[in-house]
Amino acid sequence: MIALTLRQRNIIEYLLSRDSYVTNDVIASNFEVSNRTVRKDLEVISAYLKEQGISLVRKPGKGVWIENKQEVLFDDLSCSYSKNERIVIYVTSLLLNDVNTFMTLASSCGVSKQTVINDLNTIEKFLDGYHLSLIKNQGVGTSLEGDETDIRRLFIDLLFTNDHSKIVYELCINNDGIQRNLDVSFELITVIENEFRFRYVDRDRISIVLSFLLNRLGLMKTKNSTIQSSDMERINSILSTKISDSNDQEYISSFLLGERVEGSLTLDSKVEDEANEISEHLISSLKKIHYFDSEDMKDIIRSLTVHVRAAIYRCRNNIHIRNELDEQVRFAIGVMYEFTKKELNVYETKYNLNFDQSEISYIALYLASIFETGVQEDLKVVIMIVCTFGLATSSILKSRMYQIFGDCFIVGPYSIEEAEKYLESHEVDLIISTNHMSVKSTNVIYINPLLKQNDIEMIRNTLFQESFMKMCSLFFNKNENKVVEHDYHCLGEYISKNDVSISKGKISWEDAIRKAAAPLVAKGDIESKYVNTMIQAVNEFGTYMVITPKVAYVHAGKDDGVNKNCVSLLLLENEIPFGSFNTKPVIAIVVLGICDKEESQLLNIANILDIPENIELLKNSKNIESILSLHD
Image (cartoon, rainbow, N blue to C red; front, side, top):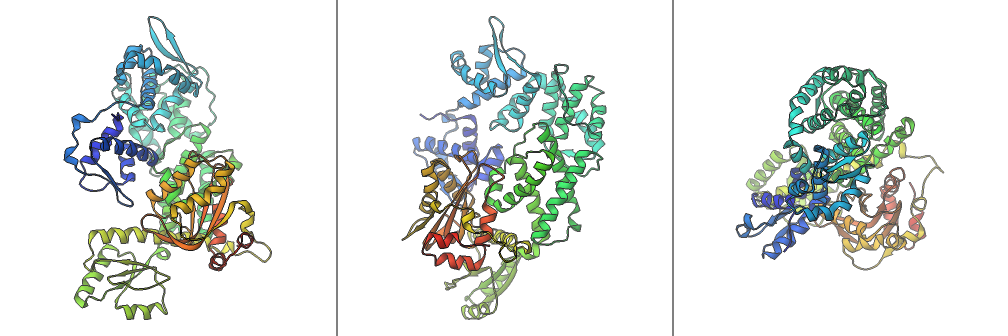
């Protein structure tokens, strides 16, 4: 019998309450976990339901669905905490209560005292990562020992960045000590928000942290603040009404200044100057790719600056945030993520900063929004409607297309003959047709003339990806990349000869990824699980990895089994459909192993393979030397 964790039980209950398919993104958002965690949970849930003779149906692009829902009984759901969840609960209890007995720890997880004893080694290893120790006093109980700064850092990490932060949140909300200071915490936060004219994004969790810190007033033995600014002095002044110790004031100020906010503010400080400089550089770099007027986007650019400012505080005070969209950003808008990472690196060196993956993803989201808004006219997709069902049906189809996809350029409806003539002198990005037609260079979607819901979803997904491809094209066709003679870079500078291969015969896209990655696996640069994660990412997020025509750039996260930065390339003798939905034709697979953010070669390689002439040369390449000689 498979035992479910509390979250897995809740996911089943959530799926049972839904009347349609649910995507992993939606589940991840509802349960405040990553897509990777959702995938693992769904594997366990699928096995559990299978024991009951029930299927968890998965459809790429649509999500998951429980068949025969009426046969799943809530009372039959076996619920227990996983070991990782138990460790988090134990440690949170130790943080919230001065002394805990083995029995109280056991009760918090619904397990026996012996289970707690068996878990002790794991608890101690977990605490050791924060330089903390577990002290056992016979007849009294267990407690934490260590530097106060490390205790506070552990609590903040558990509440904000741990995979089980939702459990930690529930434990805190129900703790008497936290409740005792919540009103004071909310009062202080409100005063600070009014003073700075912003609002904290995660107000509830920040209030819990402040309440926890208020419980521990005066325990800070040594704390030398790494930042002194007028901002900190203003917050210290507000905190001084409730907190007398200057060390505690400075610690709490640095935490509050490091949290994500929304709204506008004007501050005079060194950090604000740095944030302005970084923000202006990022916007300037975007404009070099494709000029846009930023005058109408002052508010979102100001929000970007505010976010960068807080990110600087977090970096310098070792405060980490959790970005639920991190994985999706890296896969779905990988080009913008790589661009952001590259541009931030200049200022990481200049100001001795180190933005982590979550910080880069958040900033990339801001830049994607700014860029897409600024160049939205250039990103509009041109759609041709082809319909041969008569004037009335064609008119209805065109009207519905305008209602639903009015932000696109729509031409037609045409007959097949009219469409073929139009294409002789015009380019379109997508053809929506009610009849089969043969067009080599343009994506064609076949639909019901009355435009059913599944047609709409298929068109919407395709349009999103076509718009994304246009954005990528802007990146790789920017003027600054038109280099002078003799100043060019070859593929051979980024990919080793031994890591390039040519595949003959028919092959699936999954096997193409495996074959492309094989040289890197053989050398130990990446592990097998890295390959599996890349395939899962394509199934989960679609074909966003095809960022230049005919080439897929696949990768996974730095924690998914990559041991060194590496690149490999597989040339396919025959073009294949890439992906399990919204497929795109590809002739090459580039595998990237990325563990050092300063050395990713994605943008460099994409700059070369985005050139149409190079794709034609690649198609006709008969040997590895000719592939490696392609240049920008």
